[in-house]
Length: 260
Image 1: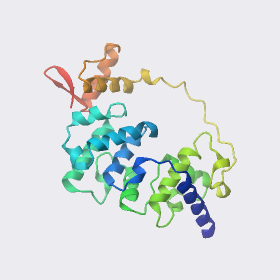
Image 2: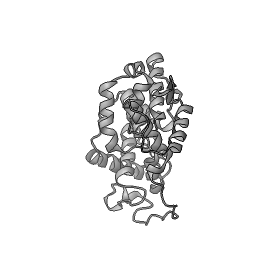
Image 3: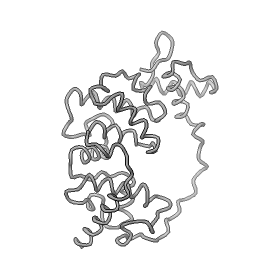
């Protein structure tokens, strides 16, 4: 069984060495740069993140420089990435690191949960821990050979974590896995089996009809020094502004809204 698992690991790591995407955060072990990438990649596609990541690091190359920025500057630079609270959490984490250094338990940083902590720990600090995102979890479940932690290649956590996530993102996808292109299909309990169809969901709501879209438009307008968008119904604007005020993302200054 051990030899079999070693063969699986070797096949996946060799595949990753050949096929991995050349992403900028894979060329560094700087914990700050890796943290920026992990926060940006939460619920945002890789193609959108790459140019914004490069721009961000050019403007704020380290935790100290980001810590010195105002919340308004950070929110303005985040426009278009969505979920603005991620920007404030990243700002808070940078301030904590600039003040106290990197903590032993990365989960004590604002906005850093178990996955992000494990990713930064393994990619930046060489910790032998599994970074379990949805892609890595899917790969482990389909292989039927234990948890992501059990599959972890000894002494090669960073490379293994990237390989498992890459496989899940590009080959072992949720809806249409490409088993014919999978480097570990020979060891997979699910290879060639049809993916169970999910129950029919309600018609997806258009993003433009969501409160999140309105909030994003408001933040973008304030970042550009403009007034509230005139093409959005007042009741929707009122609801979005109330939420932004409650979340501390905007504030009123002499009767006008401004980024905090």
